[in-house]
Image 1 (cartoon, rainbow, N blue to C red):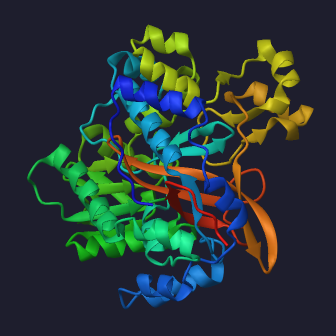
Image 2: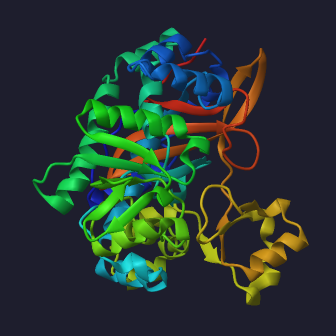
Length: 451
């Protein structure tokens, strides 16, 4: 669902909290998620949306043969009030991150490379939420959130599955084409913030062994998108880059901007040496970058964001603090001195590595063994109050199946550009679940019942 967030005033923030805590956001989205099992994805329309380039036959085969569960067959339904609430939490965090006291605090525990200043904001921040009993709760923030372009195209391939859904869809603007243009403009904005009026000629889309990455189709789509807008684009491993006094280059060709999809957030790996040098000397614009990760995505930041007293000391206003206390589950640093306490409460907690990403090294407390818990105590972990995900019931091969659902907000400079869902079974999102995958989000403003 294309979205655009406002920047709520303190009074508006208070109103949002009041509405959410009073239960005014409960509507028919939950009923639709449970009762509407119709197929809304037009697979042929999806293939047609991908077929813009002579090279796209291979891309279509890649999606069909090795990634059959990348896209769900149906959309997900979310109350419009909850969409507004997520945007308000995003705006509140932006207000906090802008504070010098916040930056001084979180950069204090970040790697030194993150302290380099830059005008570039960082593309595709991903704010991930679970829909708890009282509304959306922020689970984590990512700085290289994948899937935005895939979901923009997925949105073009949806059809109304029943009259009630058609009524909601007809009321929405067709924003998919605009989304693609906005994504390109976002990269141009990053370039202008650093380089002014100089022409943006070449972008390198960089990830480790990109040909083996599950989201390789999205890299290819971005390459095509940039080329359609007159920007040369290459997909490469960071080890293929070189950095010299003349600047960053890929096999001798100058690189102006790097679209960074690496999970080596601080460029510590030997293969990232050229990126590290280019970042430190400013010879290329890199987005997202180590500073953005330190300011937003280090999971230790969630400890601060969920600590009212700490936020007060940093100078955060009361209305913003109230919203964050509501919207972010309590998060604590795991320390060995409190081992007995954490073990006793483990069933109500979710454990994550402070510098991790995705589901790597993450554990639901009720699944922990003593051995794994001892490893957590010896490492750098946070423990977050468990917020179980909501569910979306779909018919998979004719059988109703309850899939877990989380919500991702793609954000640039505090503006929510797109809200999408990920449907899955198991502990975390995996894109391996029959019937699961990315699903468009349809905001439901009023009463409707899918028949």
